[in-house]
Each structure stands twice: as C-alpha cells, then as structure tokens.
Length: 237
Length: 96
Image (tube, rainbow over all chains, first blue to last red; front, side, top):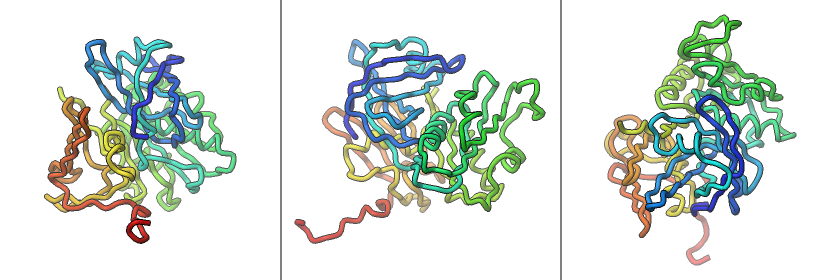
C-alpha cells in the first residue's frame, strides 16, 4: 500500500473544458474504497520529481486507476495530465490511500454529498459505488456547486444515477431554465436541497479549502451534527 | 504564490510506510491550543522539501514530514499526544 507502483496511461477522455479523465494501468493496485485517493509521481528526464494527490473517480476494478483531473492554471502537474499525457506515458502511483474520507457499501443510512468544483470526483466515486452495490438502498443526495454548466463533471450520469438525487448550483452562469440566480452556496440552498438534519445523514464535503469551510459551516448552521461531517480539501497544482 | 493548502488526508501516502495504521484516522491534541481532531482535518502545506501540517484551530505546526530517499522523517513539534483509531490497541502477551 505504501510503495510506488509503475503506472501507464491507457486512455484519456475529455471531461470539461479544462479537465479530463485518465485511465491508468497499475499492476499491483487493489482494494480501493470510494473516496480514497492516490499520490501520482512524475519524474522528468533530469530526475526532478513532482508528487500530487488525486481522488479516484471510480473504484471496483483492481489494477486500474481512473482519475478525473482539473487543470490548475500555472500548475506544475495538472496541465501536463490534462493536455499532454497520452496512452503509453509512464508515471508512478502510490495507494489506494486514506481511511477517513471514505464510503463503504455496508455503511448504510442516508448520505449527503456536497461538492465544490472538481471536488465532485471522490463523491462521484461514492455514488458510483452505491449504484454498483446491489445490496445498498442508502438514499444519496448530491449538492454540486460549479461555476457554469460546462464545468459540471459527469452531469448526465449523475442526473440519472439510481438512488441519487443531484442538484447543480451555479456560481457564475446558470442555464436559461434555472430560477436560482448564479451565486455562492447559501443556507437556503442547503435547507432546500440537502437532507434535513433529523435524517442523520453522513455528510461528505469536498472542494477547495474556502468552499469546504463555508459549506461545512452552513451545514452546521442548518442543524447538521458536525461530528457526522467529513471533509476533504484540495489545493490542486 | 504558494499552492493552496490541503488537509491531513494528503498525509496518508507519505506516512503509509511508517505506521501500521492509517494515520489520517489518528486523533491528536495540539500542544499549543489543546484542539483535538483527527489528522485528516489538519491543514497541510506541501512544499518541495516536505509537508507541514498545522492545527486547524490555531495554525501551530503539529507535524512536519520529509520524504527522503534514505527514509521518511517525521517531526512532531506541536502534538501533545496521538491516539490510534478504535481497534488499534494490541492485546495479548508480549511475544505472541
């Protein structure tokens, strides 16, 4: 679990204007849980190495790592992964990692997912794991904050995943049919679309630091038990 | 510009070779302000030299992790104590 595995890109697919899905073949990689991440290490010809953490977008297949990477402008690693990496490229992967921000099919009970931007990736993995687990009837809700409709990762899939109710909230530009003016996540959004606090849902919040802190505070303001809220912040680059 | 901070979840990889348990589930007490939280919830700044984990409440440095080819070094200047997750207690006699 702690050692580096050799990895090779086998497929790339566009996901949004500045994001794409990378599928890596990683012999020896096994047993990933939804919500976990991997560390990716790139080595330049001169020996310079860069390591970044990326959430798994899908779990369930050993020896395969599926990432959804959003470009961070001026970053060192993500522009390469989004624009340049191609099948056959080699890198190293360490993982699966993390036991805190994880959903297991036998956990049971309602689950509230709250995503900011590309923070939706590990939450999509949880929704996919729930859909793939025939025994799980846990109701899932997803509040997904994105800048514009073009930034909504996996929108078609997440709008039609069985057992999952998805609400998209746009901060900069909303679709014409939307009645909610574009803007940041508010307490009204949380009370209108998230599970009520008395449902006792497990809550997973993922996104940039500022979003995670604001969303977690709103959830507590709405009456959710802070002890049931798990967070993951990412910095990108 | 420094990259945006991460959180303690990102220390799972760097510390995986040192501890038998998943370190992100370990609970720690800040020696400076007394805040108690799981490591996953601390604020982590990654630098080329290593990772600096700060208290989510008072920003004191809890932990510094440097990954080096000779081995991973961990400094814990700001932790009063660490407690493993439930189930991490070893029972049984020495030598079993």
